[in-house]
Image (tube, rainbow, N blue to C red; front, top):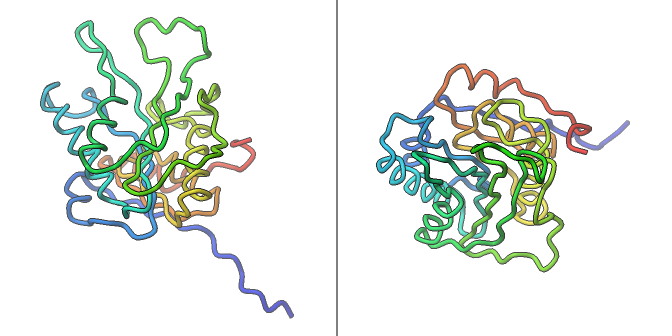
Length: 224
């Protein structure tokens, strides 16, 4: 008779709620590493100046949602408005530092093949990792430029291979037991986290996307 306990499948919980008041109420999530992509101005009903302040406050809440010895990981693509580019990576850096966190590393994830003309659309995504007390490992097995983001389950979702780099770092370097995504969309990060054997917690305002996030499945072969 096998006396070993069976391995429990990783859990996934989706909260259908506005992430800002939800995070304000919840506070620190024990054992969690946050991995998320904050909405840009086209996804919220705010003017551009109001969105900037909203974005900065949201980054701080994400940093505050994890313990000081954990990390928050942001995937952000720049946006173009009225002939000018808004560097969302710079906004993340500013807000994180104002929240008392330091930048562990900043990588680039290609959304289009390198060298391709994107005609005013963002051709890459910032991958920025911040922490209040962690230090960047001397050996970090993540390339500076991730040329294949992987399949996107949703047009605004991060690619599953890009997400896998973040989840692997959270598991192996941060020691996270839970991945938290307060703007989870259809659940790409959460599904990748489950594939790595980690529990996942997401918040999403859209009821339709909540249902998609609860059922999305990603196979380990998709991450290779």
